[in-house]
Image (cartoon, rainbow, N blue to C red; front, side):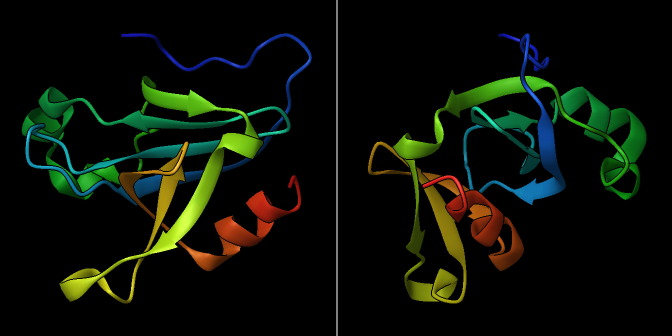
Length: 113
């Protein structure tokens, strides 16, 4: 699994720690969203960090294990449904990534479209 690092000539514009990731297969339900001038990257928190440090310290951890990354044009936003109807999720190539995103991140992300 690749680790997040800025590429040459790339600038970090925003990062969101403790981004909720709705999943059933992995021990972690959180990660970090990185927004750069060239791409959007979601990194999941390693399960062992949650076991050793607990979820209290998870909000201070910047995740670096890349789950997916893409250019701005490939990432979109959809509304949740059912019990998640008040949430917004990121999509990658039209597929729901199950990563919850907030309005401020969406607004910043939309400046690149």
